[in-house]
Image 1 (cartoon, rainbow, N blue to C red):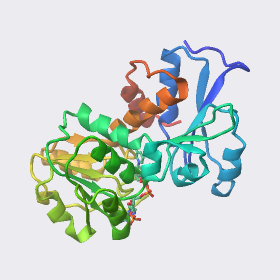
Image 2 (tube, rainbow, N blue to C red):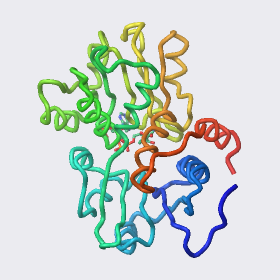
Image 3 (tube, rainbow, N blue to C red):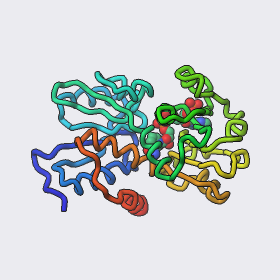
Length: 283
Ligand code: NAP
């Protein structure tokens, strides 16, 4: 049973705009309850122009920390005093912590979340080239994590080629940039294709991708989790591909965030089932 909330209850937060769809409170509050912590995890949705002042006001530990989501990840990174190595590589942060000394610490756990999702699905990161669609905050985090986990060839396909080329600069031997029109060539011998654009997300344009260009054995992943079964995943399943959905990454990135916020790994709870129940009954 949940502990009563008191004046001593610690507060952790997901911050974004919009954020009302976020499943992070479902995940973290289930872990908080199972670990019997005197804490609560809530959502904040400040107007974009008030974000910086809002964050400044949290220095010193008014809340333990924040998970940061769209559109604030780059600003969160810019406001931090102590970004970790991952956040520096990605130039964005999905995690801020507010120690008592008044400084702001930043981290990036999205990429680790995608690695956890791929490996949980039985994908061997040494299997072959991995295609990443997108070069935004989430895509950059995934590319660096794939690199850090020994993937030998990462092909970044992005509408704005310049953003993909900036990733190539980091490791030209292992990262290559492709134009959107070169997607079939990029996918031809791919072991996995990951959609890390916002295409396919509710309210966004749909992703038009001809899976005939991908090998039958390729794993198809989509980091979009609204809806959970995106048209890309639906098409991939119809063709018999292995698939990984965005919820697997969401839970995968939440685990290291929980550990950074509360100083212990999350307890074993079937948070996926809780997320699915929350999606089926949004209140
Ligand atoms: P972002 O930084 O805004 O990047 C968006 C990416 O999508 C860019 O590569 C952008 O290309 C591309 N894009 C947007 N509209 C496009 C269009 N019409 N045609 C082609 N490409 C287009 O966003 P983000 O933070 O990386 O998030 C991307 C998605 O991942 C969102 O749906 C977000 O909800 C989801 N996400 C999921 C998780 C999870 O845990 N499952 C975690 C983080 C994010 P350009 O560079 O050309 O603009």
